[in-house]
Image (cartoon, rainbow, N blue to C red; front, side, top):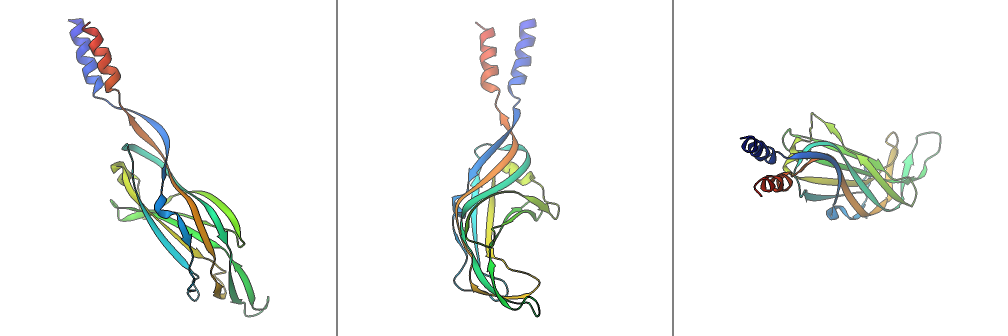
Amino acid sequence: MIRAILISWMIAFAAIDAAATEIVEIPLPGLIGTYGSESPLPMSGCYTTRSASFQLDRMPKTVYAVWIRISGTAVAGQTYCDFSGWPPPGIQLEGMAFSANMLDSLNSSGWNADCATAGESSTFEYQVQFHPHSGATWEYLESGRGDVNLYGAGYSNPFVECYPVTCAVATVTEAVLVIEADFAISTHDESWGAIKSLYR
């Protein structure tokens, strides 16, 4: 009788999945490439947008935080700015600004992560956390899939009249999505092995 009760309890327990918090990294090869343009856009700089889809091999139970990590090299551009006074009009160095976003398909909202290179030629590496807007949640990621958009554009002083002379250009050589979440840990195999041992 006791053995039957124990076996029934272990069978019920075997159907339960435990969860553990993990940090997983998902490469985003679709975001790798050159950002910038040879065709300047007056007042707004030069831009490139890329998109990448991803599929997790395990479904997260609860998502706590998500970051994007990008690294590569950047070559500063130049803008001509009319300051209408002091300092006199002249050429300013222009860096590259990046903005990543993910659409929350369940709430018609999304998540953003922004960063910018310095106004000089350099290598860069950023890991920036996504922040919500318009009531976004990570619930949609529990399906295990999503999309990331990365926008790169030259930036300049927004308070003066500036025109691109040469575009800032950045080459992203690594793009990775980092997710901290609870992932299921299956207990079926261990529990079933214990159940079988009771019959031996």
